[in-house]
Length: 254
Ligand code: IPE
Ligand code: IPE
Ligand code: MG
Image (cartoon, rainbow, N blue to C red; front, top):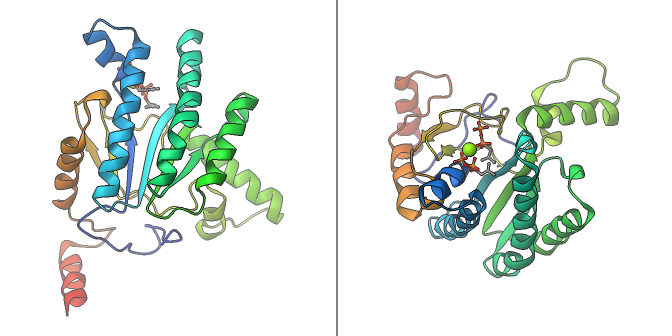
């Protein structure tokens, strides 16, 4: 499944998206509304992550990808960045065993070189420990940027394969940060903004987009279900006409 490219083949579709990717936005505003410091919003955000993971498992979703820290988030005040790194470190320390027990494979995608040695070691351990799990693949995008991803993939391809011209999609695909996963079927952004903010630029080529004003700390299983209902109502045409899609569906049933 992971090799299917939406611009080259028509991916299989079901009632439940196989891969959900979320920009978890609105922690700061949630905290502000409660007259709390921004970090309190990030802490509550971790609870929403826990809920989202269980909800995805219950609904049979196989891949959940969460944008936790963008390559542009270093521009935030040093204190907030430091607290976010601490939160990431403690989540990796405290949550991995439970994820493992629940059959979750954890992956961290992004330029992890910029993190401290301790955090990098924790990431490596967590990925190794959970590598064989098959129920849900949880990818945390940390120091991730869509442009970084495309550039690192192209650079590695050129270097390893000695190619100087004619790069095609198929050659590039294995070098992208999420080569182990199918492309997201459903993209969700909480917090009211309607933008990609340099998330999965390549991989979202044919994803269905869903925006909600709900702030990430308030995002629960019911909110996820609302997104899935919206997803189910979409017709994914992948460039074809509506008639062709109907015909293909009838052929599938027959
Ligand atoms: C998303 O919430 C979490 C991160 C980017 C780390 P924000 O911190 O962006 O929350 P708002 O947008 O300020 O409300
Ligand atoms: C995007 O949220 C990144 C994450 C959720 C990690 P931001 O809140 O940083 O996005 P912009 O800068 O407002 O677009
Ligand atoms: Mg934000």
